Length: 109
Image (cartoon, rainbow, N blue to C red; front, side):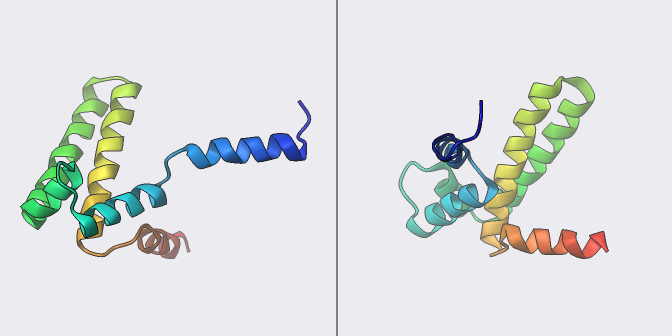
């Protein structure tokens, strides 16, 4: 199908519906600032830095186990959990995704 202005616009709409690291980070920041009742993210921030770090540790172990013993879909699932909890920890320490990208860019040279 040829790409027209109309199909390009539709494609961009579909892309914008997908989750990105930046979108997820902003959602987590919002939950930290508003602390809505019943929010898992809010419960982690209420529990404190130690609990957040513990969750990252647990998720890191789970992805290793999945990589050793399970298939691709399980690894993807555990990677999502790890990324999510890493973003919670990064929010706790006021580290933005772009800060990590800047560090990675330094290593590229």
